[in-house]
Image: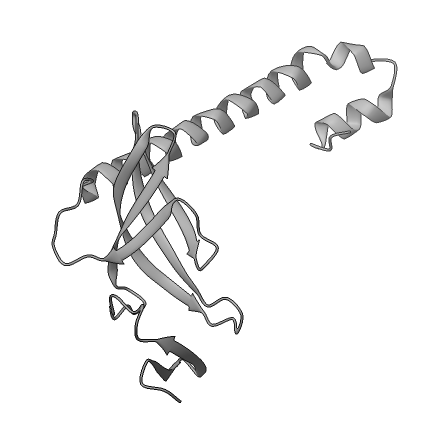
Length: 155
């Protein structure tokens, strides 16, 4: 083997590295803080993230990252499978505490989303009860249907 190549092992996977093109070595572990650079039609954005796993596929080792992205009036929690096929996205180790989203802001978003869905379920249950109560006249001639409705069975 020549001086420009070296074999390294990562999680049991042996890789041959060309030292002429090697630029940066970062140690990432599950739980490591990272910065995720996303590029889209509106430009680029740096988002805080956490490494949540590694998938040591022989042909395409993959880093799984969960990251928080601020969007208009919300905060979104996203996951990313980062490998050699990843386009318009980059990750680097985060060496500072420069996060653009606070913990309370993210938890507040989760609380608002939970309330919104709880309210929607409550409204759906009320509509169901209204339907069963007000439309039972349509099944007046069907005694079996009335009994099923009383028993809470839907059809």
